Length: 124
Image 1 (cartoon, rainbow, N blue to C red):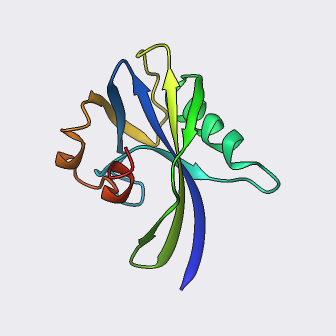
Image 2 (cartoon, rainbow, N blue to C red):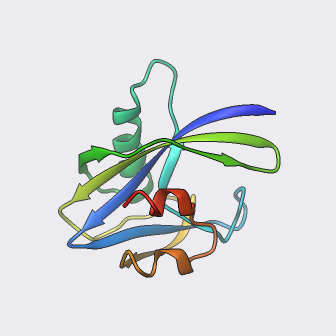
């Protein structure tokens, strides 16, 4: 089984967390997720998470702290997810075509969204 390394941005704005709903044509279409993406060749994970934040939402942010990496076993791949808590100063989102919806939600409500990686929620 191939291992893929990705970053996750747990985006926070005034005690609410950002979730994005994956487009139906994408892998795991319809699932909710944090800002996520692959690290490019020779790119630091910290830069990757901020790049993904801008690409997927139009937002810029500041990394508050790294969270502990988590492993997720998928149907085809093993994912090593490197999460970061990221603070933003605006809640105005411009979605990329990778997602169809977004929501700002409380920590308590996070587990109710289909597809969310519980291991990341447990780090908050």
